[in-house]
Amino acid sequence: MSNMLEVADLGHTYGDHEAIGGLSFTVRAGELVCVVGPSGCGKSTLLRTISGLVSPTRGDVSLHGSHLAVVFQDYSRSLFPWLSVQGNVEFPLRSLPRAERRARAAEALEWVGLSGAARKRPWQLSGGMQQRVAIARALAYRPALLLMDEPFASVDAQTRFELEDLLLRVRREHDTTVLVVTHDIDESVYLGDRILVLSGSPARLVADLEVPLPAERNQVTTRTDEGFVALRSKVARLLNVGKPSMDVEKWAAAERESLSETVPS
Ligand SMILES: Nc1ncnc2c1ncn2[C@@H]1O[C@H](COP(=O)(O)OP(=O)(O)OP(=O)(O)O)[C@@H](O)[C@H]1O
Ligand SMILES: [Mg+2]
Image (tube, rainbow, N blue to C red; front, top):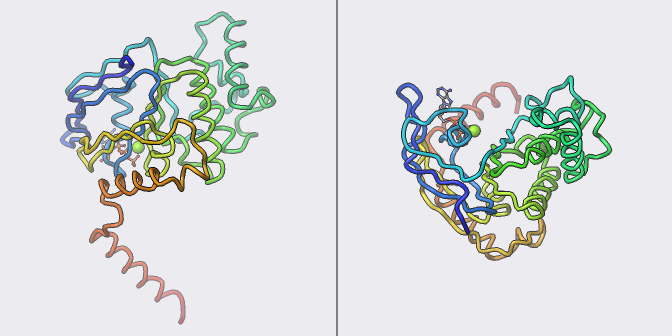
């Protein structure tokens, strides 16, 4: 399999804050790679440097394909409220002839099951549907690489499961290469062919793990599979999850105190 993305010794520093410190990894064509790491470690910065929104302070990013698309967490801010759903999906295709733009948008809306909502405005849709519009917009662009930053973090648990399966289906049907940032360990194992585990700030690569699960995933059976459970524990250990830090303890004590002040026992 050829490499779609090569990241070599990538680093980014904001002022005197080193957000990412020398990351190297590759993403092969057709792969779905998840990136997990502690809050604030530099995951979004990594995606921003890969997408070119931010120029890296050091290192290189090479993309072996002409273009990429990004899906952000906050769908409510990423869709234009004055455009219809169809208009939103067509928006990045402005340089194409009108008929082709229409056809591509209609096709992408069909992939995500939203053909019936093409004429609606985003604000008339549920959060999960709005995020499907954002995914359709990215797919209509036919990116060589799809970058997603916590794409399902703002929806309820059941919608999240549906969107995860939607992503797995479209990447399989359309051979899309995907890099997904998530803070959800279970999600990274459920979605990924591989998981990149990052350390706290500055982000460094702690592990690059293959996911030893069949390509076909199922929300009920996969999540109870032995391989799934073992890998999610491994990622959790690598991230030090469950080890209470001083700050959390202090915060919990303060919470108890403030509760005992306001709630008569
Ligand atoms: N534009 C900016 N200017 C200065 N510092 C920034 C900027 N953007 C991010 N940072 C800092 O860089 C670090 C990494 O931020 P980033 O948003 O990449 O982390 P993250 O892993 O995506 O966080 P989260 O889990 O909250 O999404 C943080 O300490 C953040 O405060
Ligand atoms: Mg982020």
